Image (tube, rainbow, N blue to C red; front, side, top):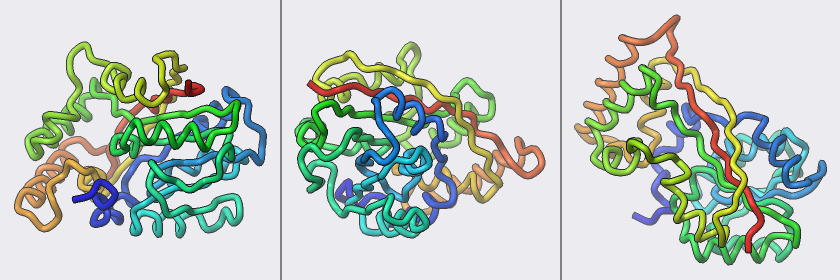
Length: 259
């Protein structure tokens, strides 16, 4: 399966239960990168539009670049009220088609994992204005939280991919994990790091949809997925308060000019 097609059958779960990003993400990057209201941001791999929202709320124009047809349509529907402030672009990260020098800030969220890093880096350099920057950001769950630790255990039992690629390793920070990829893109290892508090509250169905929206979740319609959903239901029943569970997380942000 092509990386650009991996989430086509998970769009509804993604819409229902993926965590949003704090408004401070747009505000802090706007200040740190010297942007003004009305400047243009390119959100590469914008998906269903979650990553666009903090920048729209900060008063920036957003070009949402997304190659997956189903994800892009969901994002267009979700952001329709922003009118001309948001524009949807059907293109991959490595060939956005945006005019050269046209954006002050290029950003990428979780989708960065799937990019061809050296080709993406060339494309970002082409599209950025001379004083522009790139920002990469991730929502990372607090793995020391008791509920998150139990959630990790359920996912690890259901998915070899989760066990091998997603579980935190002792002494390895998120920055360590992504350092090679980020250095490929930035061209150096001198980026600024921001950490923003974030959290998500989910009901029973939301918790199940959150897990099943992930690429490492078993495929829809399989016995493995059914077993995972049963385990998540049991986990929710054991931990919920007032019909919800809380997933604490931190939004990690890395930004710099490219060289």
